[in-house]
Image (cartoon, rainbow, N blue to C red):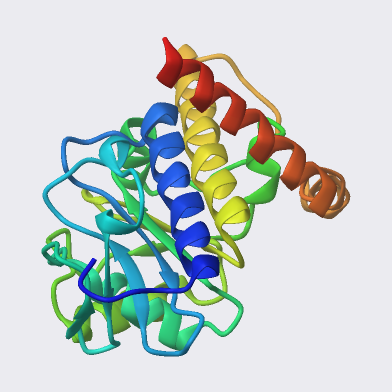
Length: 240
């Protein structure tokens, strides 16, 4: 890192690094592709995983770069991902969002290639039913601010946007919530694809039930509980 940062920011980036590695272990691995970002607490822009390494190789502060909302690098020694406009556009548009992830998980990518609605066939999917968006403008890299703005507009106020023949982008208020959104999304897509492939008729939670299920499943205590679970899994896996 080319400039000193506060202990508080360093600790937060350490947590974001753990989130990257958790996602890697939970189905979001794709070579050196995929990235997470968080809003800079001092309003300078955003901290983005550096390019050239996988989500599973992100270890700490030195694996992030600080960029402004035009893509100009302000701090850090790594290269900037070409798709930085995804993060800049969403963070500029969404005051409720502080963390953004863009990845290529296998089942979610397959689901993104369909025109299906993500249904609440499992507990995980209850968080997304009727709250996912789709981006159809391009299947290529989101490598300029015009495309980034179009993606952010398509996402609206949803926590997830499926990107046709590309991947997914997800966002939340903090690191813990955003990580769980990514994990739950891949689980939900996997479950629905498996049911569809089975040919067996299936049921899913209706809208009147979903609000109640969301209120049960995504409380702050449960988010913290699930986050700690995945951290323990990460520690066990990295000790092995």
